[in-house]
Image 1 (cartoon, rainbow, N blue to C red):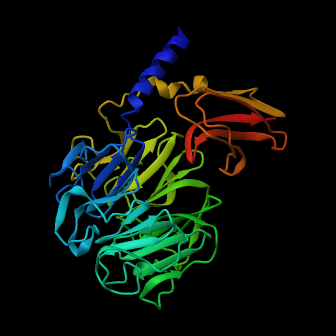
Image 2: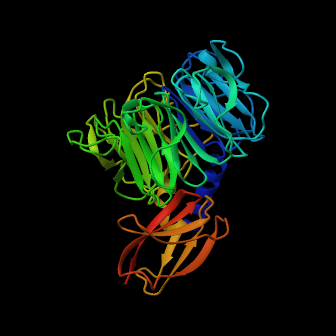
Image 3: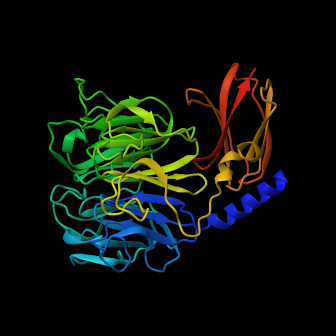
Amino acid sequence: MKKLLLFLVCLIYLNGFSQCFTSISAGYSHSVGLKPNGTLWGWGFGQNGQLGTGTDTDKHSPIQSGTATNWAKFCGGYSNTFAIKTDGSLWGSGYNLYGALGIGSVVGHTSIFTQIGTATNWKEVAAGEGYGIGLREDYTMWAWGFNQYYDLGDGTTTQRNSPVQIGTTADWKAICATRLQCNFAIKNNGTLWGWGINSGGLLGDSSVSAWSQPTPRYPGNDWGKLALGHGYHVLALKTDKTLWAWGIGDFGQTAIDPNSIIDWSVPSQIPGLWNAIAVGGDRFSMGIKTDGTLWAWGKNAVGQLGDGTTNNTYIPLQVGTDTNWVSVSCGYQHTLALKSDGSLWAWGDNYNGQLGNGSTTALTLPTTIPIAGCTLSAEEFTLTDEVLKLFPNPAQEELSLSYAGTALINTVVIYDLSGREVSNSHPVVSNNLKASFGIGMLQSGSYILSLKYNEHTVVSKQFLKE
């Protein structure tokens, strides 16, 4: 009977998962999500057409953006949305003053997704306030829109209504933009570059007010990911999964005591190992550690930290106790997050319906957002022993696992209780895995074994090494 129940739960889960979200992005006061069937959905503030629904109205629940079913990546901006299709074409919707969408005109806004140029090799896009930045498959970097403060990094202050290449090099791998006309990019060699106005010391060296072109900023060749969003501070992950922060920290958003005498333009490390990071516009931060736990710090005026209060904190606080968070994104005062089961959670400001729960009431705790066709059984959360088995436990020289979940996994990682990775392997992509690992090299003590798909934790379980 128990096996039959598990089968039925998994069957329901599989049928429903196709309507859950696989990725999310929080704009300033709107939200965007992608479903596995390639459809794009938007909700929240829509009065500049940024939801791409053909109307200029707010939506308090997710609504499909057009009829296309081949969306791949997207980015919610200040008052617009950019998206890339599976064919590599780039599209924009929403605010377009100063050529912000890059569609070749300065029409005030558009409420349907409009193609940006004719190139079909776009792979990444980032949204600033009034401008955009994109990367192509050939590792060239392009920008368009407002450029009064060297926003675009092309060495001029000339407004660009269509994408122009930034420099001549073809070695860029990651980009990030802000509302503050300040931008960063990482090259393939792991070096960090910045340009634009030096707001809040984000670019370092307060004696320089702006850089007109990408300029090497902070030392090192191990920078991996960036989060700037709409705020006055930066979070950055290095390739070793250490987390660093700099910029204005007046509400503790850099995880430093706001009363400390410190140069906020110098990166400082935040303890732990991390998989995902997000920056909120109203001076707050979110992060997911390698064990799948969710953490928050900074300003908390409307509950955007998700700890059930409106108290600010410069000490990162764990949000709940779940260990299956896989992605997080922040708007001005709201937060979106996904779990490995595809469920969408939201909290914080909801004035324009950006949480997607059908209301405009703010929430101070993560709340699951009902999605039509996405059926998640509450019992699924109690089946860890059925989904992932570790044996023997305690173990001495060898640990075996049996995984029979619904989500794909391609990495097995072991962490100590400080969050430090001590072992990993990469089995064939599967949702039905049996394997054994030698653990004789581990010191006696407790560890966490996590099954992951790419960088997303699917399920974790603790074991004891004798």
